[in-house]
Image (tube, rainbow, N blue to C red; front, side, top):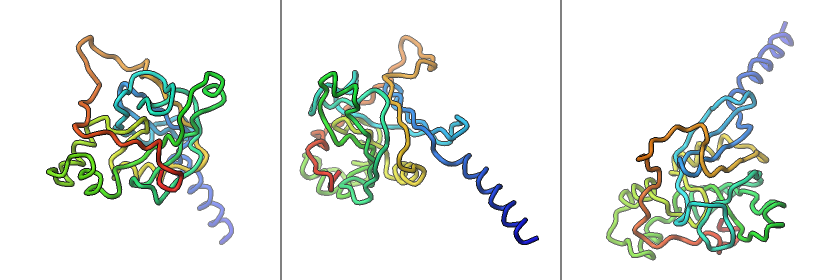
Length: 203
């Protein structure tokens, strides 16, 4: 009887867990949207994202402030990032290398872990931390990484196992837009941080 109970509990937890486990991540750059799917293809999480200062188009070279487009792997986590946690995207992939695309350390991450230092070094010393976070949450402020709020990053980080597939698209072909609809956020009124020059310990 005890073994039957354990088996039943295991089956229930396994079925329930598969509904919550991330199996694939989809990113739609134009919509500033990141979607997490489970093994059944159901949406289990949706996040608003920030991109770099030059968000349109596939990444070509290091420093162009673009986010890659294509199929990649989330291949490692960094709990001690200079941002609030980070997960690495496996750019460049084999196709990117053949096409001569450069750049590295493309991450999904939260806000800087030292917001006072961040804003002071970038001419935003007059801002409160809350004001800085509000600007970051509604702006494109990275150098090509995918930015989340700290709350969303902690949630995303806990939902992702390594490795997990990620597909990054220029836009969502199923999203209906009017001709006047604009999805591009205002640019951050502070110099953009260059994550790509960070070492692996920092990013």
